[in-house]
Length: 287
Image (cartoon, rainbow, N blue to C red; front, side, top):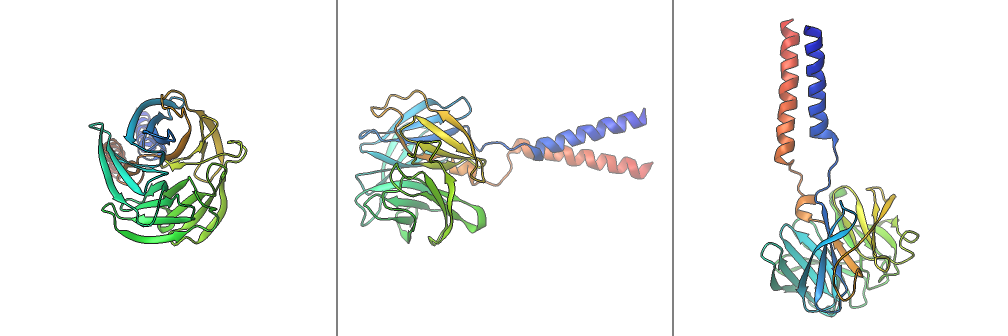
């Protein structure tokens, strides 16, 4: 009986440890896609757990949409024909108007966020990416050597002290290259979406587990693992923008992706697992 009880307890502790450590979960169930609707700018909320259904959409600004970043309940967006970064409150469904502007640019492309500052691609014909504070102070300008201008895909990765991943052109740039935060090329073609997106790909997002690339003319998102290996296509359905599912930039919830603090439920499971291990240890010492 003692042996049976001990075995059952060990199995329970192992199960709790698997729950606490073993499951890889997405930071969020949604990916937000900025739709090139030519005005008003529409952002889709895409449920990637249910096959790409558009579950909500938001008219975030008046112009031709390009970049999008989600940080908690706030969307930040850019337009192809403006140098303004706009804000939108998802909780109240209200526009926050222009948050700041990028000096010297006539249009802005894709966006990323590093937990403190924004990284914003130029849409004025250069291969520049600008690092800006949320209050509109320019910190750095970097040039991406593989970008031929008007690059529509940019993502920030926290690995190795921070990295940027960017596609190489507007729509027809399905290769995504890896750079450090000074613009030095680290790896060409880290992700190759040319075959799965028929040569046309734009926005990219990382949800803490996988990458998602917008196959802009295929009404789909291509999912890749953290090493750049293709997993599957997700068809985007729904949405009533005038441009249909012509999606430019993508964003996961950066607040969730960049937050390394375990969820309360995970901490509770960890506590139970450690308590079980302590109990086993005490029984062994008492035997």
